[in-house]
Amino acid sequence: MNHAEHETTSTSRLALQATIHCLTGCAIGEVVGLAGGTALGLGNAATLALGIVLAYAFGYGLTLVPLMRAGMPLLRASGITFAAETLSITTMEIVDNVVVIAIPGAMDAGLADLLFWGSLAVSLALAFVAAFPVNRWLIGRGLGHAVMHGMHS
Image 1 (tube, rainbow, N blue to C red):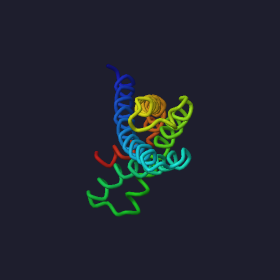
Image 2: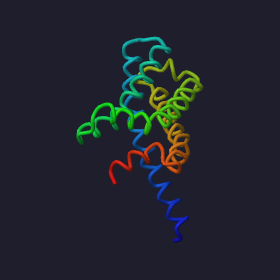
Image 3: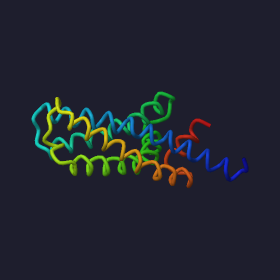
């Protein structure tokens, strides 16, 4: 394998890890937010807003907390977290929410309905597919999770 192939493989591997990391935070937030909003009988807009807020909170938290546990000051850890996560989370949230809204009946499905969980699973899978090239582009330019990777090197 030549240097360019190794670099492409390395970038793709790091992008895959970054996208899985982002999906984890977004999925926790979306599941808690959408399931919680549905269980509480909130309207569709409030339920979506809760899911979005929690997706960002968990997405940022999965990066911020380990940095702070490693002794990094809050201001520096926050800056690195926002740089590493914002575009990826935003991409996932846009795709995830557009898909859930576009699936007929998904926003009105109850927690016991396969449509609720199926639409959420499909939306998160498509969000992952959309965020991977975004993360790869960021990492290729030394941004996004490349910043995080540099913290571990």
